[in-house]
Image 1 (cartoon, rainbow, N blue to C red):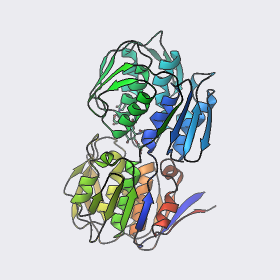
Image 2 (image 1 turned 60 degrees about the vertical axis):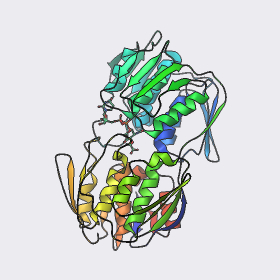
Image 3 (image 1 turned 45 degrees about the vertical axis):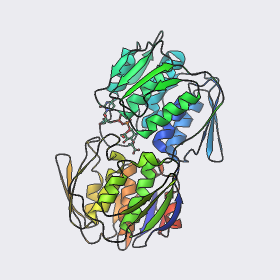
Image 4 (image 1 turned 180 degrees about the vertical axis):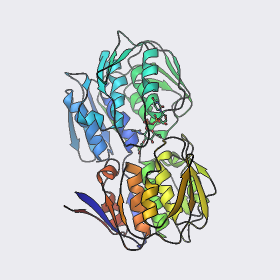
Length: 419
Ligand code: EPU
């Protein structure tokens, strides 16, 4: 069994290249299935969720290989439209092959997607939207069976700005006749990224990054090369690690607009943020200030994907904080782990009430999801003594070389094997 051993109390300092974005590259990989040619995605993070997504493509006949920093997908031929098996079931993004396959060939059989256990994560918005576009979808033997004799454009109003449902409709819209309009669409930068790559493939999409997205043109098969944006959540995670260690780090990024919502909260905690087109510098010269109230919201609000990491930081802040989680009901997993370290937190009705303590102490902790796992590393870095994090596989789903990066900045974290 693998574990991370962390020896805390070291100040993180230095420069760090931020990996490509997990949540941007996943829909780009699904979009590659629509291009009956070669799609090259540069700045692709080397993380296990990417490998799971591409394994699914290989199983249905695509040719996928990795080049330095890039992933090359030749989807000119596929021999199956069955998205099932362990790979499909273990990654949430596999649900996006539903829209892509319906657009490409009008048929898909899907296992229900997996992903981290952070909430119920139903797919009803996806299914309702695709049905509205003319797909016939049924659940047979616990699989989603989708058929269509031709999707048609229509107006779809999402009950909630779901990231995945917005992406699935955009992908399906590539195969629909007429115009598809998404109202109450998610506005996350990762959606804009998908629309940009599809536009490079010849699609016509207006309104990406706004609440109303209009899809009117299809893609034309051609070789496409696209470089994925930096991972705003990874940048935020390292910033939190700098915050709890009194550090000073300089993150190299390629799209600074994406950090909206995160930066404001960091500033409210008293962190110094210096921000340019291709970098964000985060330094902590004094103890972090508590936040009287912060809530997670769809973009441009504070992202749920940063909530656990923020909780680790606020555990050692000066004063009392309240975090309200509004997106995923099980994202307070880490509270029990932080309590073992001496944190003072209780949860009630979707809110975590945190009394900052001067310091945490090292303990044996269990990662239960990707962001929660990263938050435990942050807590370990801030604490005195040794912290052990079990189940690091969750963290590797989304962070490329996290231990190497932290050590480069002066931290002390190592992957080890136990019986
Ligand atoms: N929802 C439904 N029905 C649906 C779809 C969503 O009720 O059909 C609900 C969800 O249960 C949740 C809310 O709507 O309460 C938002 O879910 P959304 O669909 O936006 O999330 P997602 O597409 O499953 C993506 C990211 C998540 C990130 C969320 C929110 C990917 C692969 N995943 O998930 O990333 O937390 O958007 O921003 O893009 C992570 O990186 O750690 C992660 C979990």
